[in-house]
Length: 235
Length: 213
Image 1: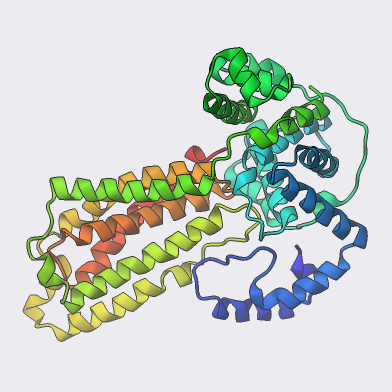
Image 2 (image 1 turned 135 degrees about the vertical axis):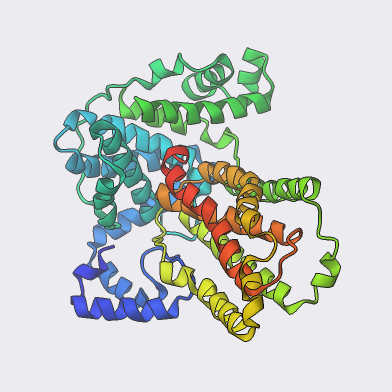
């Protein structure tokens, strides 16, 4: 959220000064703005187009329903999120458009793998944005040999809603095929993923088909998806 | 591979995936790490024979309070750096507040003492090993905290590494308090601070390398 865009610099500095005195811990542990700046945040919020606010809320409710076990809502969340993330990444990666889908898939896998660390009290858009930004910087660093400090430029634009700006629908294939990467996994991870994630078997059915225990299937899926995310990060 | 296929794959059966709480991994890591370094201390260094008598010593209590402050500060920061979307910055001035406070007490004690005894206040008997032992004792906590942090989603890896380091340094110092024969405040202000900072600096440089996810 670019608070400083909406305020005169002096006002902003003064408010920062006040909050610096008021917040006595060593870190500012806030979602969008320090507590003292909440009224500023409400101004910023009213500046955000109503359509986007509604869509961010829709996204959040789909995600939360997904966390509670509703797979259809979760799929809808991922599809809706993808359109926003794709637009965001296209703009950030306009100089290498061929990489957009790869980074996008990395983001989706990361969000999927980390979804249980999401704290429901925090706004989903800030959470998703930070992860997308993190994966983007990670990609820039390894593709370009950017050093850590250069990446922080992307960091400093803390624009909470930027990823939710425009939407376009035509897509291309990612260069790395995740199904190929699947072949590199050990069988204890590959088979559970193939059975439950690609063939759509339930955990019990997959356990019967492979002779593994149900908890081994669950662990295999979990570790396998983590390993796939790590492989994407190295390619 | 089309992204739509990946979405299909991720969403299918998502409710029956293993639900690990990443927080549990972090807290288990912290608990296990402190237990390990406690064991390390008891086996290799032994508990201070006058430990019970120390409990009423105001200098000793100052030391405990100083170290615990950093344990608490680092712990709250640990949670903050692990959450994407939380704005976290390291404020060195705020971080230095407990150090400034104990330095003032140390200075008073130093000025108050006989000139001939002043060197003792600073160096005690064990100054040469204090910081190193604290750093060594913090290593189990450091390793396990980093492993727990990796399960969560830190997005500023340098800061996350430094915070993990500070936390384990402070926890290591707290464990070392049980052994350490020194109670003078100037000694604590210098060597304990140094000991806590060693893992913090290590974490600062190690974070981007080991915490990537």
